[in-house]
Length: 461
Image (cartoon, rainbow, N blue to C red):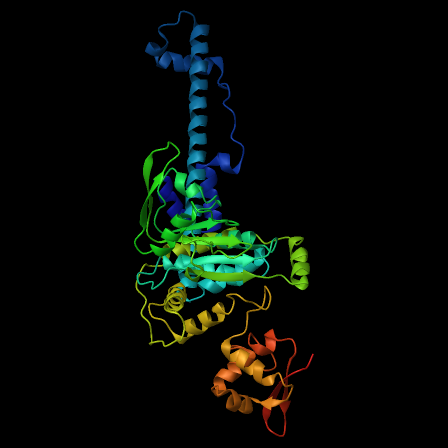
């Protein structure tokens, strides 16, 4: 009749009615109660005939009644064995069904992973699900995703270490913890740790790991090793320490270990061994009164279950290759070299998360927008102004209406850059998506029918 696996394959090729019929025949326990073993319903005369036909089997018994009782016991043992075989058959079929379901589900998740990643929608997918369980702070999530991407980047110019700054009870810790749900479990220390833990951990800190230290207050003992991690990201570090036993030990930290710190104040330590803030990408969390109100409303809402989405995200991390990303053009920026190298790394990280092996203008624009969330910010939902936006604000602060062409002439900015700075790359003047018209509450725009152009101004406060 074939193995259970062969039967399962056969079942997939026949219609539902035949499937049920075959299943009931092979596995009655699954489709109806299996009868308990019962006594033989043969008459004494019928049992006597069986005994007569097989004398050796009953030679050890003296009386005919003893022989009949022996037959009945033997018959019951056979019934019990049949029941056990059928129950084992039922269990085998259940295991097979579960295995098939698990295989099918794994195949479906793998297919979704590949589709999302190949379509370049991994970051978007993460943001959509992040918003289901956390309000705002998408810039923190994005920063954490970029850290994860550096573990897949063979030519990172500068490591990404994150410092999340903000006031007490601003949600720094919870924002980071929620963001870390979107990182592969193998690439993070899932529990926060005290700074001194790093000295006394039972095992060395492995490669491609995010260490999250919450509300960090770096003392003079811990600060040096944190600094070593910052400066030795590409190669790892070995440092001599004195252990709990009072003896000398070597602390080994593998390469590609990235830090996430949260603190109320600056991460800089007032000492020669202190932390160099320029080595951190600093994201600031601010809460306005409206933010706090929305958060309170959000806390009371039922949250969607994103368990399956997190499985897909984990699967995507597993299929992202480790490779070099080629820059599509040369960049010239008047910023410190460390910031410049971090910018290049972020552009490459965005490209690899979007499934590309070469950067594009889309990656550059995404990072430019992302970096506006680096401190300071307008509030927790709104990015700070770009250099171009600041130039336009300075011009329009006099309250006068100006056409887009006039703004371009007076700021010396290209026309298209002015348009993008006003309503965002994907927005319009009627419906801004980013840009000055969305960020600045007093910014105004109207269409001049005579001039056939939009007029922009800032309403005096």
